[in-house]
Length: 460
Ligand code: ACG
Image (cartoon, rainbow, N blue to C red):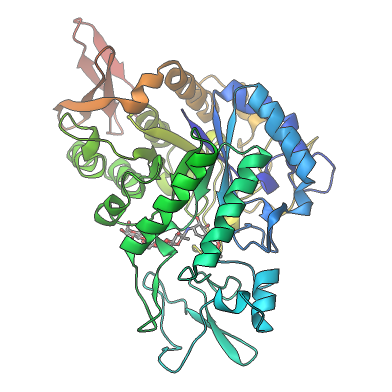
């Protein structure tokens, strides 16, 4: 199993309005098949006023800028016929200010007025969220609402059980439309506010209870549905959610691999594996599969971060040879650059996918200018496809290898050896085994293979 994280707006435009759309996706299904991708994580495509789609105004409709529900279903059908599965990114922690639910709540209508969190005399209106300086209370009319993700996204109040019922309906609706699962946004935030003391506070046990019920509901509709969760936190917190979801994004692994690649330290790499994937070592027990990735839409793109093509290739070699499920963010395969201003403003890591070297042509999206990926920068499918050792062809080779070895998803790892330059791993199950050699140094190095041959690894 391997995933491609797709931002539709930037992908392929079928009607010339500059925006990627469902018909564009349908036309380009073969792109994924040729790359060896078998699962697509579709970033939010429901009705939303925001470019990123994470503030939903109507949970039962698609964003009309992407086409109709029928267009979406056609794209899913074509993909399904070619062996692709699709999971929908469904942010349910909050809604758009323009949503009917919030608008009705503002008018004091039942039950909606209870579905949000309003400040009372106990609230500290200057309280900030813990990871940056953003406020959590926002004024609207004569009221203040709680919004952990900013003024455009009032949080829903999950203390209300009638809301749980509504959310279940939404999950069912999108499974019936044809999705094969979900990426559950902001999973640790469902209960992140203590309504008794009126203070921000993660309530992991309540979150776990909520998600257990939702996942069992999803599986009761389709027992093969795939549920991927986003809990962006330290390994200790991530562990609290283990076993509830099929796949959990391994944020600590992503962060540490990048640090390791920068420091070129083999020791750090070994420590990273031991710290971030203990369940894959011989005595470990895997509960939720590790979702392995280097970057996502909230982060600096990998080439902008590592600033070195060989290191990017090495990073992906690691991702595609480790057990768990590998994910790639769209555009990383052609070396797209991008540095978001911060997690509140991610446009710069979501630039139009570059099909052509001159920057225009059939299907090219142009919804925003390309600050990081201008024409003639070598960052296009057209340019990359013809170079044998391009990032695109390297990643293609890795994905094809991974697809041919699906057993690696559930394999175990053993660290066989490491010296100053090289780490040697054994990835194995009861039947299969591969040896992987990662040269972390920016210089050439060689190893003696078990069969006596010398393997030369080319560094920078
Ligand atoms: C998701 C989406 C994101 C989206 C939303 C809201 C949620 O991917 O695109 O925003 O629908 C937090 C949340 C995540 C959230 C990100 C953006 N991502 O938990 O769910 O913010 C710390 C915090 C994390 C925090 C992270 C952000 O703990 O909670 O993520 O910082 O940088 C170590 C620590 C770890 C720490 C990291 C990084 O690893 O262990 O705890 O994480 O370092 O410092 C979208 C838009 C927004 C818009 C919103 C409504 O992008 O602009 O406002 O929608």
